[in-house]
Image (tube, rainbow, N blue to C red; front, side, top):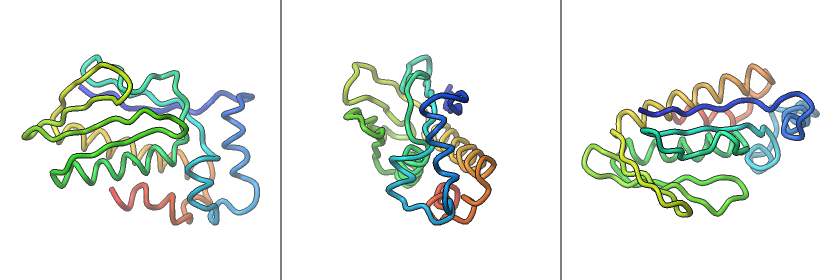
Length: 155
């Protein structure tokens, strides 16, 4: 079983200010580098069969993670291996194909877990839809941002 979710930072949190700052100016015109590394900090959690892949206490930027997961989903859906990482972190999560299973492992921690490829692809798709929905609900102008559109249009 895969649990993959995110939550917005609480009001007053420095991470919440990463959402407020994005409302300044023209959100539809925000550059990819800013979307990936400057805005939209969230807590993310990923647990696969009881293994904590991403700790719920970890903050990452939502657009960067969503684009990384979108790329990983494309790779595993086509039968290729994939990786994804986190802003400002050396850790990389490896996704290696083993028949219809995907073996997941960390470059920094000693765990390994396998999951069905279709189940992982479905969990990633759901996460990507939720990320896009949250971004555009919080800041409707982001629906016109070409980078934000890639989150669901590449899905």
